[in-house]
Image 1: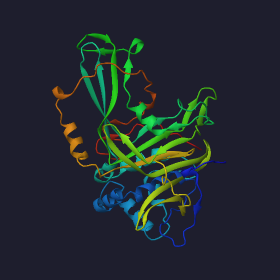
Image 2: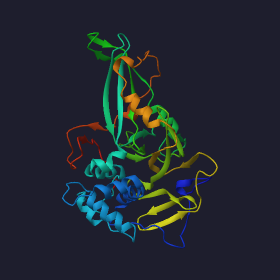
Image 3: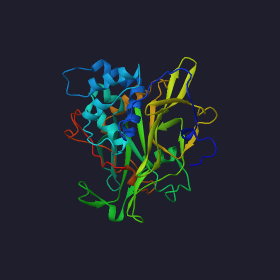
Length: 371
């Protein structure tokens, strides 16, 4: 595979003279698991919370993560205990890292996993009587659809993450066959619907939906289009995030490798490293030195950390959450008609999950088996 231009996530690496960081031994085809475990380990707030809240008698997975994190501080670590806890029977079957990232979080204590918790509010407004209905939707990640932006699976056109965020939070008109039933009007009416960020998570995960079902091929295919990834990202309303980790996939649908690229704060400045199972190397080309964006044909999961330099952001968000219904402004029912497909697989709240205790969180996920 050939790449041109400055392509951060597909760059080359320099072996470090001194080993600063350690990798994870690969058990079969578990690179999908290793990549997200490395991101979780390098997420300082999560790592410290796991250590702080570990209880040997706990039903959560924190104690196993703590043991793994302690090993990673000293040497290449093994993941067999985590693999067993996650119920992975066949280590030679490649799976989806997004699925196992969420599975780990549902098995982790709420005190540790809360930094990844986000909350959307789906606001639906009747265009006739202006009655507004709100439904809260907790989520672990926001999915961004690539299929409408790339003309084919070869990626002859590009995709911008900022455009994907704009599309995700854009108002959708419900009319014609898509009209909604309004209790106040006692009938079907035109309406608008829009997702609003009710709670910004400390760490925001964006999933680039590279694996889509093709009716032409009657099978799942991978979308390899180039993605323009920003270092800083604005999420409505006016919350700034900074990129600090990426999980990318190289290869086709049924074979390939996952690895993690992570920015680490060091004494002489931030440096980006590649974590490829047991191998840890510094990126030869350090990204975002000139522009706010870099391109990648393999980026799959993007991890953004909430910035702390904006004064009053947390206070502003809490004030917004406390607004009464009378203080909320009504939508005027004017907006662009857009597809709602990119928002269909956000997470819903429930009474638990087969994966384990999750403090009232239920994850609905249709895992894509890549074997």
